[in-house]
Image (cartoon, rainbow, N blue to C red; front, side):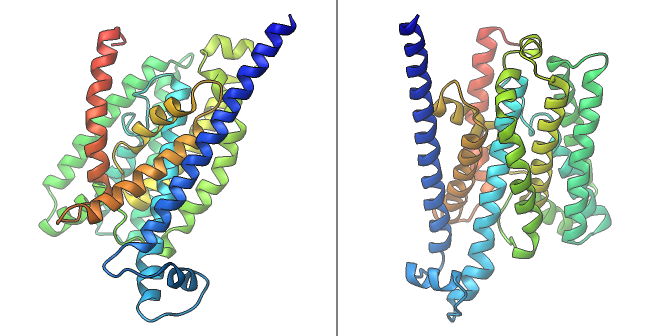
Length: 342
């Protein structure tokens, strides 16, 4: 008996050490990438100059480049990447399906429809586009959830309705682009590609506040999230109020996704990739929400640096993440088909 208990406790300690180690390493990589976002550019400033600017000192040239261009870009990538990564990890864990992420389920498409409509039809300013995107994202997930519950919640129904909703909203976006003017098309495509270009400090507080407020709630629900992964009946037998827990998780993650999408546009495949990567790194036994968020940060910041400096032409971050994510999606579909999951 004692041997069995010691074995269980030893395994738990190993899993905890692994979780702490992986989370620490991901945090360090994220901080290094944040530093590179401030360091690299058309003009290279010393670390001392960057620190002096960040502490409030005015340095000719450096202050404008760092405070107006690089710092907002870095913060947008940091918080949007964390929001996309955490939300994708939560959705995939909660719905027990690697395809169940906000991109595939049509949530980001809902925000995109509203943004494109405001750009090409209403010719709205950035504030109106932001508000419309957030409201549309929340409305989309509300419709998706209501259509999927009926008498009881159904995972398969949710995914099928989400895929259909995403296809329908994609058609609406295509139609809006078809009837728009040439100038509006270029602006809409810049937004749809997902980009950190033009990020401004005054646009970031809603994103930062949303992530800071919603993340602790999701962390507190992490144990219940792990139980939901066991299935509806198993979670209920363990005392989890599945509907309330699921609604709280969905509201928290969708708020982050909606605000992040409104701020940077729908950065492709970050929510899709972050969860599986974090799960593989952390292993079983602990929630992958925070590691998934950190993987999202790394994907966004690294992809933005690649898009800016690896090629002669500068590419938006969404183009690079799309190139990384598309092959994995094809691989996942082939694997699931062979396993008979379709």
